[in-house]
Image (cartoon, rainbow, N blue to C red; front, side):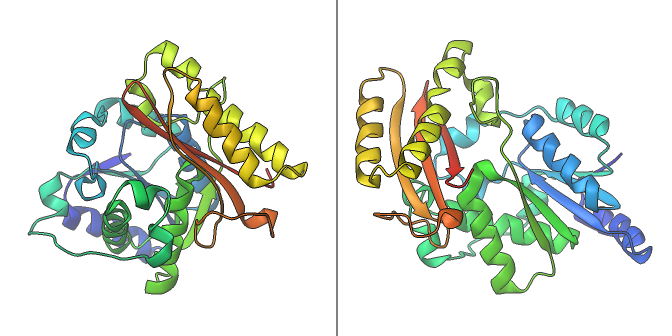
Length: 282
């Protein structure tokens, strides 16, 4: 496994593989890797000759400076996990390498970025669009792999690919979960064991709500029940719970197409913000 910190050196290495007609699969990450990330690497290996992973905590997608400062970092552990998983190339640049000059570019994704994560994290998706565009330009991969946990982000990146005509196949890999259903996340490292156990309520709520909707319970009643459930919990604070269509991630009063319907949730416990989702046709 080869590790690079400089764009020029990485590009030279990738060019050698591209000239040999090797298919490059890219897994963009912010480090603090877990089995969810490794599942992306494993999926990439199925259809790629060369698997490349980026590790970069992107400052432009954080609207909360404290969140950026506390984001977990453990590069040595990350590299060990990636080597064991069979990764071929790792790109772990410093911030100055990615943002060498003042960076004021903004990307507006329209209605898709004005709800849920976009509503509660202003400019977050603009920052995501910036870094993913840069990575696509640097790596020029044939395919890219993202986790379902960040569902809205996946559709943001899909829109980026479609509208900027990147010749890249995008793949969504199902969320990996802990034993109690909690979605694996780098942020989980900041939770106590007790908080991890209690945060299992998030996925349990998604499952029960999806079942209720499929059994005919009106969406507004499902949302009311969820709000009441979290009000009764002394440690979990609900930020949002919505049933949306994945075309635009705006709330819907009723289901017209289960395949395009998702339940999305964000909650905080122990000052750690967690997100999760469930596609209705799970």
